[in-house]
Length: 365
Ligand SMILES: Cc1cc2nc3c(=O)[nH]c(=O)nc-3n(C[C@H](O)[C@H](O)[C@H](O)COP(=O)(O)O)c2cc1C
Image (cartoon, rainbow, N blue to C red):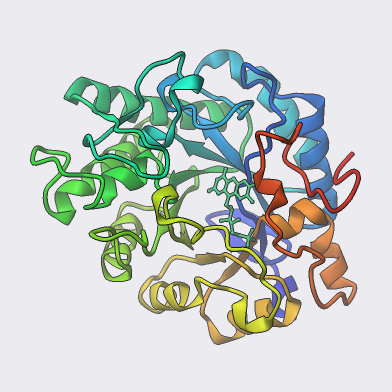
């Protein structure tokens, strides 16, 4: 089974091709510090057999808080507690990468002490009914530095690499997308200009942690909004990232105002699975670096087929591992299909004490 063949990802030895896609946990304390509950979740994932675990989106700067009780990494006080998390995953033989994120216009004033969210341009978001304020030059450089400092903290805390969240309508995606970035200065205009924010982040990270620390990017292949990113530009962005030394691209899509494109419900047939497969295959054909496919993969056969056809190199799962953190081990033992029904009750995070599958009483210890 190709799914269980080892894979070397920029020096990280994966025992199989299964990745836990970044999934917000709502298990940090109110200030974003690691808790026992969070460590318990990651220990279950490490024991459950995933070759690589990517954390939920971790906050690089307080102006980018998009959800409550998210993991934070925006100052040095977070480093020591994070070492407990990485240490426990490593002790169990797992690999763990931290996803770095800033919510930009997809933040809510209630989580920003009443402040107006910011973004590259003042483009109204009909899903939140918020118009962000346009960032000025010094704020943009401050956030670039915040990503680089957060990468250094992740490195110091023992993470095996980082993933920049450049998808799903969050700040980096907002700069890349012609829909949300209407600037005509160094940070906007044509696609080369819109890429500057991300390229400056990557260059700043390399300066902080050196070129050998693995940097991955989660990228939209399609924003699914009028005037947004389409796969052709997404691929050109991915090629630029490859040129900058990024070691893997996770192919996703959608933003909040696009509706339910990122996390689709009722994946109840083989045909509905792997809903970004066409984009992933398009990227994989053209890139030399590994491509992770995410979105609706539920059965072992589909995962195997994706790998055999070369449509992706790694299989990334989110909701199935909320329901069954040990799904990789179960697949290895012969299980055919994940139990996750994509009911999306796990998305009702404001009602839940923590992110978990509501179909079972206790998803994790
Ligand atoms: C509860 C929940 C939280 C999520 N949090 C994140 C996140 O922090 N960062 C991210 O890039 N994607 C996040 N996602 C999206 C997933 O990583 C993934 O792209 C999406 O759920 C589709 O994959 P799936 O069908 O395997 O669930 C989240 C999804 C869910 C259901």
